[in-house]
Image (cartoon, rainbow, N blue to C red; front, side):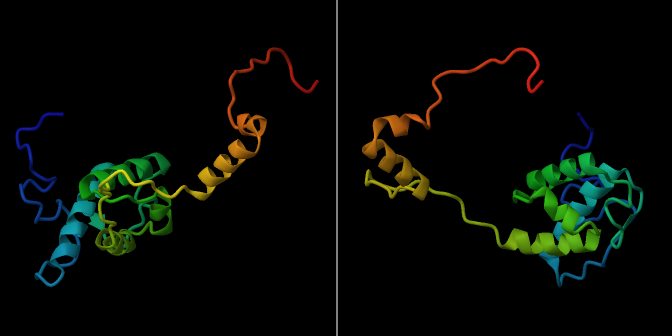
Length: 161
């Protein structure tokens, strides 16, 4: 979708500092700058998905018109906007906007560091499952082959008559 004001938020500005139209959140006095920016970002997502003119901080996602399909879209948009992995159950556990943002703030600040490649060619330790498969392969070749399915099977007709 192409827009004349590319890069602008739903509120119409380009830097994401103003809340979306009709959002009745806490005033931004600079005390919770990160949280406020997070709250504004999430408020934009909620108002867009739920097609709301006014978002109440104490409103529940599902009481405001959300359903399971919109919940999936919300989680995907949160992942894209904030770059943090959040499970769908997170929204079901905190369906109220204020609670959702508060818990999301703790998830955002507790983000894991990125995975980096290791140097060198040293051998890495096997996982417990890998050790078990290696042990079976050493013990008996036929037992090891039980974990590999070399063919498919097609069933026709009625089963369990």
